[in-house]
Amino acid sequence: MTIQWFPGHMAKARRQVTEKLKLVDIIFELVDARIPYSSRNPMIDEIIQHKPRLVLLNKADMADKEVTKKWIKHFEDKGIRALAINSQAGQGMKEIVSASQGILQEKFDRMKAKGVKPRAIRAMIVGIPNAGKSTLINRLAKKNIARTGNTPGVTKAQQWIKVGKEMELLDTPGILWPKFEDQEVGLKLALTGAIKDTILNLQDVAVYALRFLGLRYPDRLNERYQLDEIPEDIVEVFDKIGRLRGCLMGGGEIDYDKVTELVIREFRSEKLGPITLELPEEMGVRSEAE
Image (cartoon, rainbow, N blue to C red; front, top):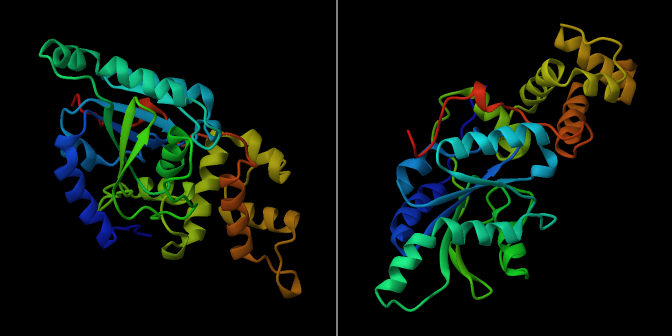
């Protein structure tokens, strides 16, 4: 399966980000804490270049906490400040403002020394679809300004949003990249909901999920689906889950589409617990320090 998704508004958004870059002091790069590497758009480094940046690992409640700590250290080892947040619950919002002030302290001190009147920090939020940008904006602004939804591609245009007197945010649509060099990146994005299900072969996504769980979180897989052992043949895994959960067709045949939907739904709804799909030591380095 080859996964690609680059609607026209994403190409336009890339141009808009480039054009608006000079208006902002700092970039908030929002990534999914479950896939901190795969949810980072490699085009972003090229576009924002050396603009100050704060990486926000969103949905941290859904990710493996110990692995998230490794990712934060990974980014900070590369000279990029990173925070774990949960925009849905509003966790980490105060830290975003204070971290931004720290990153920009020298710049604002220079402005003050030149007699420039103090002003709010201007930040641009960038990230892939369904990373939680609109939810984050609404949390920071403490009101429902940005449209939200669990379908990727909700935000289609840019808008400025005030966050008290301390900050102004420029929202941008989620941007994927035209071609995934590594199809495993596409599978991870698909599994976590960053790509519309309607354009995917969901059975391939479910197979990827089950194989990953069997390798990294076998105890959770065994417990959730009452497997005494994990069969090497992935079809046998589907069969066992299908029988356990009653995903059957006429004649007692396994309904593989229902098993597929079940596995993906339960992964996304944390029925299998908090999971991170990648470790920093396994990933190539992708940072502005490269």
